[in-house]
Image 1 (cartoon, rainbow, N blue to C red):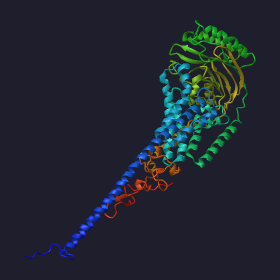
Image 2: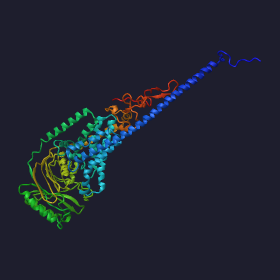
Image 3: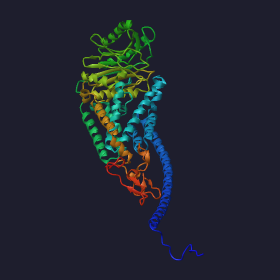
Image 4: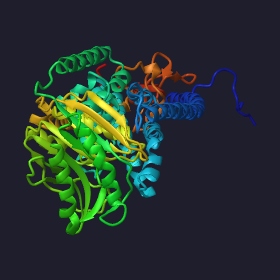
Length: 605
């Protein structure tokens, strides 16, 4: 039998159509090899990306720790400066410095860190009032919540500043933050039972000529100015520094000019007296008669050298309504026999109980009566007054009433030429309370005689200059005699009221609206902190990236200010476009069309 060889010598001709099949096989093989190679490369890419993520996470942790440390240091610095620069005895220069540390770090750390630093720093600073509130005033611990609320106001102001800066509006931030602070200061004074007691404006009351700005703006102008330097410095805009210098020079120049003008009326000699007393000393039984006997020779001695007005403190004795006519007759006799205007502070019990000031006249006319409007919560459960009291052009107020700018301004509107103020301080707050009264005088251009028993006895002119002053101890008598020129140095604040506070409210509102604008939020998403070099930006949400976008564009080979992972191109993922996995383009990039949902936006710098 003859057999065909299974594999004949020479090339075997493929059957018809086999070349097409062979081409497909070859293509599939090549495709498989290509796919394997691409898969291997992709696996290495994923591994590199994972390592980069780990490194980025560790970097974020280290950045968070650094941010926390920086925030803590800023809080301590702000707290220490505010502690010394505010409260019952302030160092005025330190008040200007207090906000700066927190403002400086606010744009360099996360929002949470900035808010906590501001809050803690302000709480530390205001802790200088804790002993006064709890011990001197005897208020319950819950009263400290007011200090906590004030710290919250400062923290909110810092966060608004930070938000505007990181959204690319540093100039707006420099004005909106102090405007918000001043506007909230006005709001607190309008609704708080303590009025403007907590305003930082009082820290500058003795700083001449800056203090004169309140005759234009009220205390809200000083509140604005105290935060303006911190906001300008933290915004890092040279033009704003120049503007700050102009504002400072203009404020000082205005004060110098205003101090040149004072009322030219005839001076009046005033005696301010304080004798050793006792709380709740009743009359005519208890210790009241003894206290009156102490004042009787002091009044006569003050009138002998020519005092025309004699001012006694607040609540020198307690007297029932039924006994008031008899006690009033004794004071009227002193006023008539010594030919003086005699102002006396009494606690009148019955028919509602009133903290009252009475002015007895030398001609025997009926005494002028004034009831205290603003009573200390928890300490004075009395009926508040609701009327002003003037004799000729002289007005009466009592102690805490001068914590309220609006009430003092009403006397300015009446063209009051002199305010006579019986008061009773709590020893440690004598300086602060006397300076609060002084500021009311500058605001409305009114001279003030204030008798702060257990604190300060003061005579101040229409521009707030201290003409005479002495300390009134609790256990010894004190006498202050000096001259004041009754008359008003008319002010814009008296005429226009709280216009500056409302202007600040509008500026702050504009800043808040800009803060909520969509465009501003997207600036943060893409890491465009305008005015800050990209390489200097904190990683991820450290700069306020609410979208959690940590792969920020940076200089060549840098992502978010960190070194790009091996094989990476340092390009923001929003700028990569959609990747194509088509054959022949395993790692190709198809650029996004303009207007596509994920297309990067252009940001002006």
